[in-house]
Image (cartoon, rainbow, N blue to C red):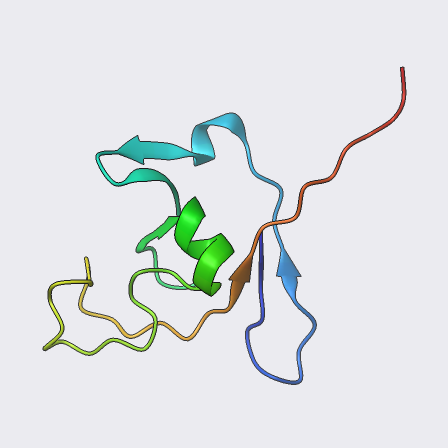
Length: 83
């Protein structure tokens, strides 16, 4: 997963461990590296954002924490062809 911390910075990359992926009734998610809110895999693929993106404290329906996140998220699948 990568995040763009500000417009001029290179994207930050992180390698995920097996216990980084969580599951609940809404699907599989990761903790957003910027704000800690759930970042559902399907939402990252569709919108590139976690659930707290651009939200404010008054928008409690789609926000799990009282933060407004500005992270842009993406998922990159990488494989090693070594045998």
